[in-house]
Length: 239
Image (cartoon, rainbow, N blue to C red; front, side):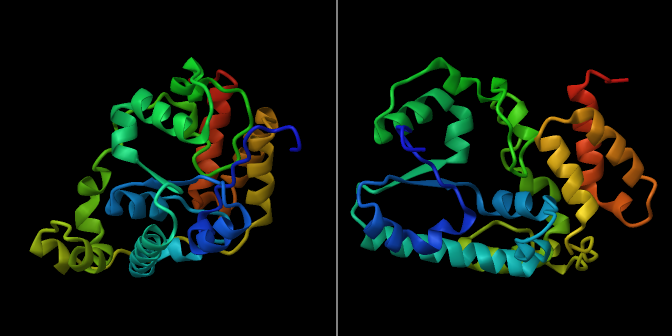
C-alpha cells in the first residue's frame, strides 16, 4: 500500500515483538486494546477458530496465556518510550465511543469522520472471528459478560483470580471442570464455507452450510450455524 496514509497490523502475537517493531518502525504508534481479563478469555474461549490459536480451547492454558500477555505488556510499557503505546480500554470505548475514537485519531494524526461512530455500516469484507459482531452498532451489551458464566469458568478463574484479584465466589472454584471443547483440527469444508461467507457469496454459503448440518462431524461446529444464520440474514431470509 505505497499510497496509504496509515498501515495497520493487528496480529494477535504482536505484543511479543513490540521491541523489534519499535526498532524497525520507531515512529509507529502501538495501540494496546485492553479488556476485562475474564471477558477477554471468555470471548476467546467461545470463538471456535477453524485452525490455530489452540491455546484458546483449554481454560487453564488460556488463563496462563493471558497472564503471559499481561506481563509482557507491562515489560514493554516500562522499557519503550512513554509516548509509543496508547492503551484503549474496551469498557471505556463502548461507553464513550466518540471520546475514545477522537483520542485514537489524534494520536495517529488522522482527522475525525462521523463514520467512526458507524463502523457497522461499512461494506468492506471482514475476515476476522468477529465478522458477525462488527455488523452491529457499538453497544455495551457485552460488558461484564464473564459474570454470567462464572460457574462454568472455574478452571480459568482459579488461575486468574490469585494474580488479578478477580472476585470469584469460593464455591465457583469447586465446580466440576466443563467438558472438553469440540476438536479443533483443521476442517477443509469449514474453511471453504468461511471463505464463501467472507467473499459475500451468501447463497453459496447457505447451500454449503445446509449440507454440513447434515454431516455427523461438522454439524457440531458452531461456525456452521453461525455462518448459516448470518448468510440468511444478509439475504433477507429472516423467517
